[in-house]
Each structure stands twice: as structure tokens, then as C-alpha cells.
Image 1 (cartoon, rainbow, N blue to C red):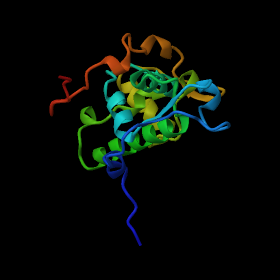
Image 2 (spheres, one colour):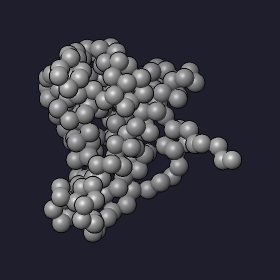
Image 3 (tube, rainbow, N blue to C red):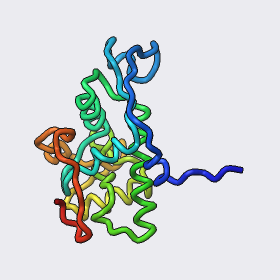
Length: 177
């Protein structure tokens, strides 16, 4: 019996993004692409973009997909694979934390919201852990009919395109360099 890969192993599996020129009708992203091309990213590329978010900055999964599409000069990024790769990134970060890595060194997955500013129940620890991590950065959440959300999440969006930022490196002291 083969051992199940950890999220950290999946994050580092070497998978590369690829472009789909012809999206099959009915496939995720088909309508949105409107005849254009689609990128299927990779766990490491998604992780890299999320690492570029500064404390207090928030994006939605749609913003992340748009950054990937701009980076690859295509119409859309695959909605299914991007969500899966974001979850791998979040789980890898929590595996690293469980092994003693400092919170400041982790990929800040909690800064990515669902559509409409809602917290993501599929992230490690669910919406409760995401709310705690956001609160530590001064971001307030509220309960809405659809679940916990950041009401003013648009005010927390980065001013510059995420994909245009340099890759963040974090020193052991947690300071971005």
C-alpha cells in the first residue's frame, strides 16, 4: 500500500502550469473563457502568489484566478484546480506550523476569501481559524446569512497587481525582505 502524500509533498511535487487551448464545452471555465484559453496552474505557483500578500491585505479566490490568468496572458484560470491548489497550500502551511514553523514564515492562506468576502469553511481549521488569523491582523469578520465574512473586504485589496509583485522572502524574524 502506498503512503498518502502530505500537503507539503504535494506542494513541492514539481508540477508545472499548462495552458488549455480548447476548453471542452461544459468544462469548468468554458463559459467564462468565451472561446479563450485557460491556465491550469500548479500548487507552487498558487502558493507563490498568496505569499505576496501583506498582513491585512485580502483577495478573493476570483482575484487569485484573475492574477493567474494575467500572468499567463489567457482568458481564465481553471476554477477547480486553483481552489484545490489553494487548499494544498493552506494545508502545507499548517503542516509546517505543526512542525514548529513560525506563523510569520507560513503562506498566509487566511488572506484569501471566497466570493463576496466570505470565509472558507474548507480551509484547515475552518472559518474559526481563518477568523482568528484575520483578527490578529486587524481584519474584522461578521456573521451574515451565508456565514462569516469580511464586510469591507474591498478596502483590504492590494493596490497593485499581485502577479507583478516580487516574490516575498521572509527572514527568520518574520520581516518581509
